[in-house]
Image (cartoon, rainbow, N blue to C red; front, side):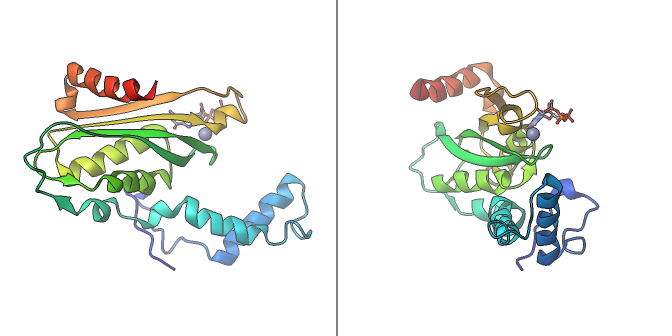
Length: 207
Ligand SMILES: Nc1nc2c(ncn2[C@@H]2O[C@H](COP(=O)(O)OP(=O)(O)OP(=O)(O)O)[C@@H](O)[C@H]2O)c(=O)[nH]1
Ligand SMILES: [Zn+2]
């Protein structure tokens, strides 16, 4: 089994010693199926615990990934380019930590390089590292911003997430089509005029 990278939010929890076995995880799925009122031994469900645990390995694969390692390759020769780099409409799928139900949407990231730039695909990879964990949209926004800020130290960074939470659409309040927006601005983007520029670029192309 791959090692789990300890998430700062886990604090006292040691993911390796506290981690149940795969058999225990499959048994937990069988328990939930029975709790819901279905028969975990019937033909259609007998392999479901195995599939669910496999799916979880993918959906929560971010616990085994390190954002710093993804971002460490910086390209310094950008021909003196110093203006905004905007990577927008990065799709993501995450699960809220309250209900373990999906929230889905798009991330927009912009930065003013201080020197080098990162490969464009790496921004999308960093989004997935954090999206594939349990957390809130606010925490996801902060985690993405913190990782990019730390490695790239840009003159300014903007992270914006627009998402729909299935825990509000499929259950509870049952309001679908509700969009939640979160933002994190650092450095040059603390200037409201820069925030307007960022949002104009994002919205201008989108709508
Ligand atoms: N701030 C924030 N809230 C979230 C996020 N995802 C889900 N929630 C909210 O978390 C709250 C949990 O509220 P609780 O009262 O503890 O749980 P609940 O009884 O299931 O709440 P309802 O969803 O209102 O039925 C709900 O209001 C959700 O809409 C998120 O990413 N950020
Ligand atoms: Zn939720």
